[in-house]
Image (cartoon, rainbow, N blue to C red; front, side, top):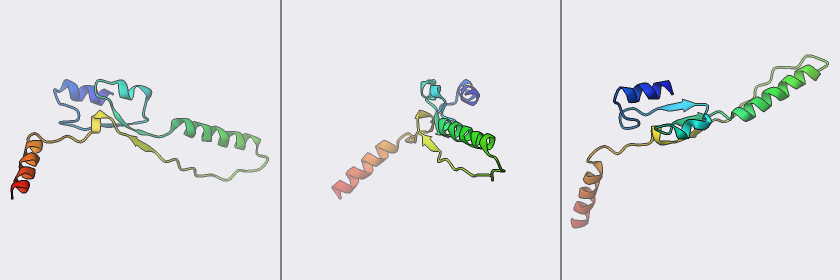
Length: 103
């Protein structure tokens, strides 16, 4: 959130001048001045799996082999990373469409 504040304090616009994406998908990301796009790492599942592994280690009577668990992160796209249409692009597209229709 500090980066977003610094960008806005520098009179730059999000996402027009700079697009920004955070990590962790904190609960208030959608409530910021510019809703923050974020990579959701599924912290709840991550914590549950870590607790299961910790319990397995405590309850194991023998050595437990290391285990790799892969969680699939997902992008939660919000305003801070949206595609921005360059000024004049909409007008250019309309002119092109009309020219094709007339030819």
